[in-house]
Amino acid sequence: MGHLMRRNILTYKAPPNNEGYDLICIHPDPRRNGRQIRVQVKSRLATDSDRGFPVKAQTLDAFDYLIVVFLNVGYFFQKARRSLSRDGATEPEFYTFPVSFIRSHHDTRSSWEKVRTRGLEIELYKNEAGFEQIARELQIPYPEKIR
Image 1 (cartoon, helix red, strand yellow):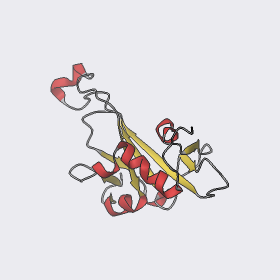
Image 2 (cartoon, rainbow, N blue to C red; image 1 turned 30 degrees about the vertical axis):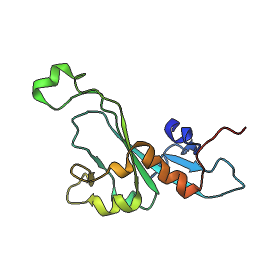
Image 3 (cartoon, helix red, strand yellow; image 1 turned 135 degrees about the vertical axis):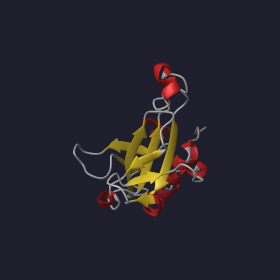
Image 4 (cartoon, rainbow, N blue to C red; image 1 turned 45 degrees about the horizontal axis):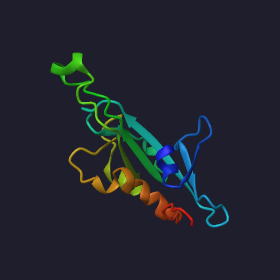
């Protein structure tokens, strides 16, 4: 939420037990644009995760964007480094995917129904560039100091 609000996107937590999305994003001036964007959030703790995340097919109509956060707190799966889980700790990475991306990469062959990002060109969706998609859709200009 803080990263979206930093970009001047007003962001609110969705009501509890709300299925399909976690955040609601709106323009900071409600008179300017009444559109709201629904965002689902997924996170992965381990730096050495498979870069995939589960998404159920029935939720694909419930959100407009999915933000996956790779927290990168350390290695969890490499046997040689299990005792040193802080090894590999790096800055978190945020990827903001439109629902069209999720639909085209959604794998329903297993019960997990995962989206796998390893090997995909996803830099276009990373960090600020990803948040900018939501700002553009809501027509929110970049924050600037008024003199």
